[in-house]
Length: 336
Image (cartoon, rainbow, N blue to C red; front, top):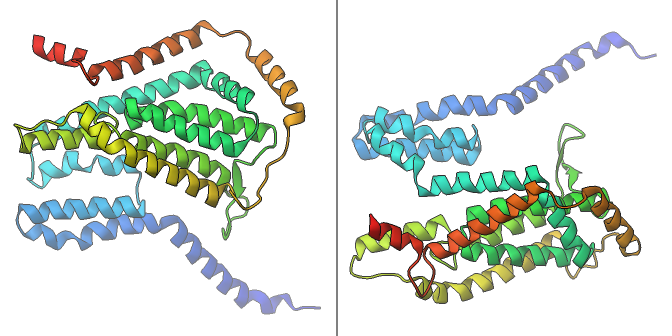
C-alpha cells in the first residue's frame, strides 16, 4: 500500500502552485490597473502635451489589455481631461452627446424593438423558408444584404438592425441540429467553458465587417465618413464633396472589399472548397417551417408598428440628404 504521509509535501507544493495560477488568472487585471497608472506618472511632470499623452497611453493599454470594461475606459476623458487641466468639462461633455451618440442610441432602440416584438424570428423563418437550410448560401445573402443596407443608412444602425435577424437564423440552425453555435474552448484549464463556434463567428464577423465596408461607399454610411467630410470642409471651405462623387469613387472599392471578406470568411470558417457539409434536412423542411409559422400565428399589431417605424426610419435616413436634390435637412437648416 502507498503511504499517504509521503504525499503531504507534494500535495502542498501543488496546492501552492495551483493557488498562484488561480490568483494570477483571476486578479491580473486588477494588478495591471494599479501598476500602469503608476508607471506612467513621470509623464505628468512635463507640459500639457505630455499630460495628454499620459491619458492616451493609459486608455490605450486599458483598452488593448481589456483590463476594465470598454464603456468604463471610454468615460475616462470626462473626469481626466479637466483633472489634468487639458480641457474644460463643459467642452468635453459636448463630445459625449453628439450626433453619432444619438444615432447609436437610436440604433439600439431599433434592435430592441425587433427582439421585443419577435419580428426577427418571423423574418428569419421567412428567409429560411425561401432559401432553405443552406448555411453558405445564407451567409452570402446576409453579408450582401447587410452591405446594401449599410450604403443608405449608417453602419451602426445597420449592424443593430441586422443582428436580431442573424441571431434568429442561427438559433433555428441550432434548434434543428444544422450547426452548433457554441463549442468548448481548446486549451482551457476549466473544462466545460464554451465559446462561439467557427460557424457562428463566420455569420457575426460577416455582419460586422460588411456593415463597415458598405458604410464606406457613402458619406452618410459611417461616422468616419461624416467626420472626414466635416474636416475636409473645414480645411477647404471653398470645395465641397458631393454625395454622388463620393459614392462613385468609393462604391467599386467597397464591392471588391466585401467580396474578398465574404470569400475569406467562408473559406476559413465555413470550409468553402474543402468538402465541409452540414446536415441535410431538406426532406423535412416543409414540415419544420409549417410548424414554426403556426406557432407564430398571424402578424401582430406590435410587429406592424415596428415594420412601419423601420421603413420610416430608412426613408428619413435616405431623404435627409439624397443625391440629386435637396433633402429635408437642408430645408430645415435654411428655415433656421
